[in-house]
Amino acid sequence: MSDAPNANQAAFWNDAAGRTWVEAQDPLDRQLEPLGRRGMAALAPAGGERVLDIGCGAGATSLALAEAVGPRGEVLGVDISAPLLDAARRARAGSPTCGSPRPTPRPTLSRPAPSTPPSHVSG
Image (cartoon, rainbow, N blue to C red):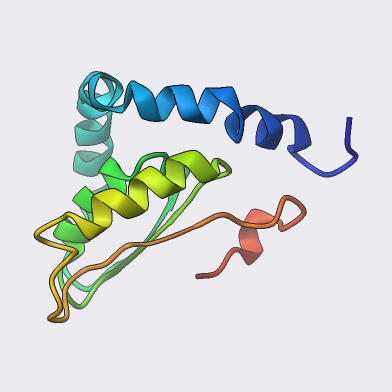
């Protein structure tokens, strides 16, 4: 066991749990979508806003947020799981909203170092 904050969670989500989530991503996204819609309704993101999506997983909410904040807004999705971030990057690349060469909302997806406090996460 490591002394680094969240070391056990990092190990868990970067091994079988992250890969398993990616394999079951479509049904899990459908299952979690109602929660995401409720969160989006409560947040009510507006054009031009900057949003931090902590625990962005495979990126479904980050992509929805990017569409909501529009081309002048910015979304930063962070997650502890490299497999989920890889899935999120693939989703971003295939998104008609985020994948075009013209200026459009493109969520940035990154994984902070395990010892980085959340208040210091940057893209």
